[in-house]
Length: 97
Image (cartoon, rainbow, N blue to C red):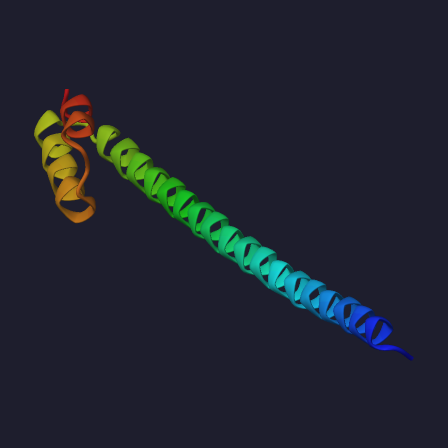
């Protein structure tokens, strides 16, 4: 083999080696991004579920308070529920009427 054939073969091997590492790096990068995306979506779904459960608990508490016969009892019940659950002011005003 002459020198030009050896250097040509060496360049081909170097190019293959570079492409292999580039492919490995790309695969790791894509895998990392997909994993991060999955974690963000999972956290958002968990938060949405917790928010929905909290809204259901609040609605149930307000419904029970509004079933009380006397206005004073309803107001006290709503105030107690608001303190325990930190209800928004608009819900407290709505349910006390």
